[in-house]
Length: 118
Image (cartoon, rainbow, N blue to C red):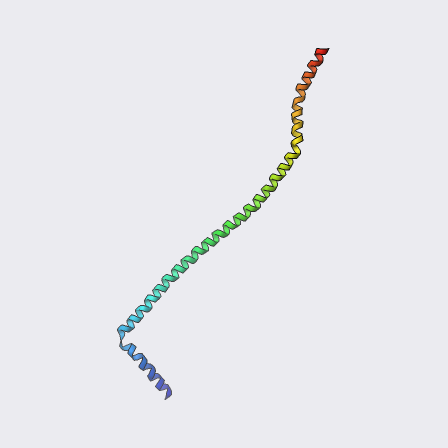
């Protein structure tokens, strides 16, 4: 008996909605509009997510390139410093080469001077 009473009460509440089909159609239309707006919003979210993923991936690539360039630059700094140190060590040899170029003219002048005194 209690169940029957609950069913009758439920039907009594639903019948006014069923009787007014125009109102029901309006409610359904609002539901469809909400569904369409939700789909549009989800499309925007998906698009934004794709753009964000693309930007993040580009950032990761650039970040790896930067790290590689930092290592490369450090290696080049070490190489340049080694070359500068070597140049400092070779400076006396440059002077030896200059002196080697000056010996033949000096020997020539000495020979001419010897011939002049003999």
